[in-house]
Amino acid sequence: MLKIGLTGGIGSGKTTVAQIFEVLAIPVYYADQAARDLMNNNADLKERIISAFGYQSYKEGKLDRAYIGNLVFGDDQKLDLLNSIVHPATIKDAEEWMGKQTTPYAIKEAAIIFETGLEKYFDFIIGVSAPQPLRIQRVIDRDHSTAENILQRIQQQMDESEKISRCDFVIHNDGTDTLLPQVLAIHKTLLAKANLRI
Image 1 (cartoon, one colour):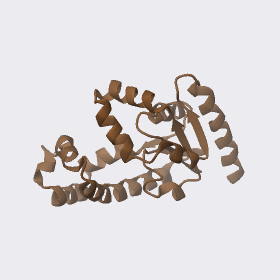
Image 2 (image 1 turned 180 degrees about the horizontal axis):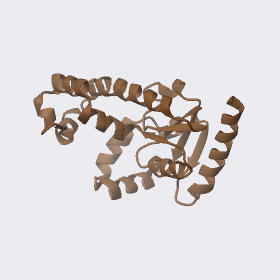
Image 3 (image 1 turned 60 degrees about the vertical axis):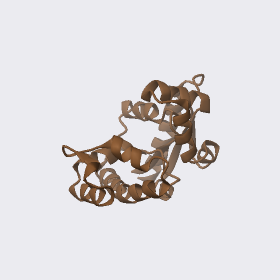
């Protein structure tokens, strides 16, 4: 089975692309959602987060995302500390999940594949690209955030042109190129490559 990474900057539309792959019966591991679930349900992880950031990190047994967000936003040291706790647990969880899949290929959707050096874990990486003004507008519509806040988040991620240049496949989600034909073409290619592995 091929292990595929799916990445793109904030607002690029990688979740939408992932959902199309799911319609094609390809399983998708959503790294952000998995990290949230692990932070809420993994006892060891909860203990380490409380140890690093205090008992206020949890309210009624659930991660207080607003509290943690305020702590790490704009503080690279605290953000690095949080990532050093959460990322290894998410990577391990994703590896276990991948090991259970029986399809020709499976996808891990994650914003920070190259930033965390995880590209070596995948056979191929798909990048989702969109113009920055469109990405900002999508996130404003989705999160009701401010353009300034979103720009700060974009600046914390790898430059999109650099990220996309490292991908094996690129999907353009600019509002003019239709997504489905692009996904179907990649799906066909990946099925052929998976068959060569058998």
